Amino acid sequence: MDTTRNLGLLHEYLVYLRVEKGLRPLTCEAYDGDLKTFAEFLETRHGVLLTAAQQDVAAFLEHLRSHGIDARSAARKLSCIRGFYKWLLLDRRIHHDPTVNIESPKAWKVLPKSLAESEVTAMLDAAEQAANHPQARATRLRDRAILELLYAGGLRVSEVTTLSTADLHLDAGRVLVRGKGDKERIVPLGVTALEALSTYLREGRPHLARMRAHARAADASRLFLSLRGMPLTRQSIWVMVKSASLGASPHTLRHSCATHMVEHGADLRSVQLLLGHADISTTQVYTHLALGRLKAVHRQHHPRGRHVDVETSEAKPAPFLLEIEEPA
Image (cartoon, rainbow, N blue to C red):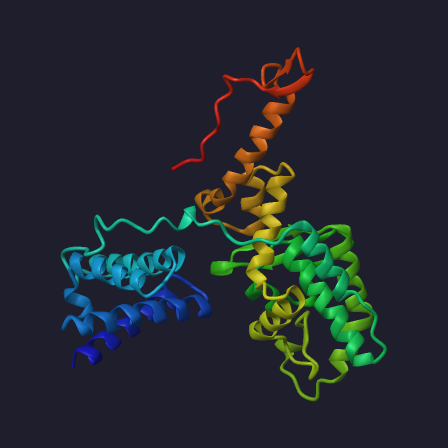
């Protein structure tokens, strides 16, 4: 009975997310999975979603921690649960939000993994190796273009799979991307990414498109195609990236894009716009890089940042220079 009540409530909430909030199917699927995990945990405590208490939510987070779930994933699940109970409050089905005063895991303190610039260069160079067979060459050109997009543009893998040929504006050096909530943004691309995409469109995609026997009109315009001429899936891109980068994920390339931009002096607002973050706080995970660069610039350029030891004529950091601490 409890399971039936929980599933019915979750179904109503997912309809609300899809219809009223306009969330994309993949986002709704993630919400559904997180809430079902919480509902199953409540059942072990003989509880249901409508009557969950603050102690239940706190116990759930502790359960996640004890089972090795990282802070970032736990924070996402808590955010999902918060949204669910906010909906129940607005709908007057409950009178108290059990997530109030629950401290969120400090997911933003976890530094996203990124590749070194030399590792990215090696990966892209390897993807550019020549292939004799037409099919092999077509897929190599496609994979190189995808890797360039993920790194040069910081795209999410779901954004890559939904791109159409009409979204590319190579003459203007940009691509139109549809992100979370179907929000559109313009992403500028560098010379190497534009060259990879241009070569793929000219020499790779036509061959893959010829392999398509039957396709819907919507599929026919998709930018990246499989060997059968059908739209490439998220799973296929994950497998390709892991193989090309010896274990990294598509999201690792997105983080690498942001990390390397900040290391080279980009401001966080620009990185936020490029990545399509709705809130600047999401982008602030990269501020530690900006602070590290600030310390180096200060020591190099500030007149009191370094001083010369008369005996050794060797430049040393000034003794009064304070270390800049990262925000707590």
